[in-house]
Image (cartoon, rainbow over all chains, first blue to last red; front, side, top):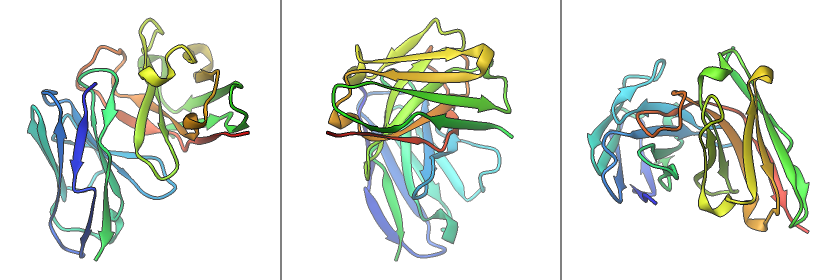
Length: 107
Length: 124
């Protein structure tokens, strides 16, 4: 199985901060990497697909990059509504796997 | 409105069965693969199973193989998960999710629509 390792597992940041979350795959997954945002009590929401494609309606402060084994999600200027848990997700091979999540909290 | 609505969760004893349903609306259901994803309380996301648009390709995570069966009825715009021989470790919120592609052939797909989830608790 392809293991997805996210770091950090949690972080504290202030409004307006630039935040970067990393995701590393245990083997190359090409660009088949997605990012989701989940708020407490809610279903995950797709933010970015195939490593860097911003989904319709997602604010442009979110961006993704990477290829192969190393990927990043960046929030350029943290807003109040961005405090949530973020998950990476590989679709290169089944079983499809998710990272352990990164909880973004208010400093 | 594009929507997925799960149902069928509840409290069940270990070893018993439960069938989850997911009703889809607002999109052409039989054009897309569908998946079940679960989340144990306070934990991360785990993909459980996926099914192609025409039901010809199905896959499961190892921990549920032989116990869970995914199926779909395109005429009813519905996805199902039959869960047998349930264990305490199956306790989780179960989400159905729509794929951006039709097939289970691995590639540049993602889960773009999610239901609100249904809770399954396995306990005596």
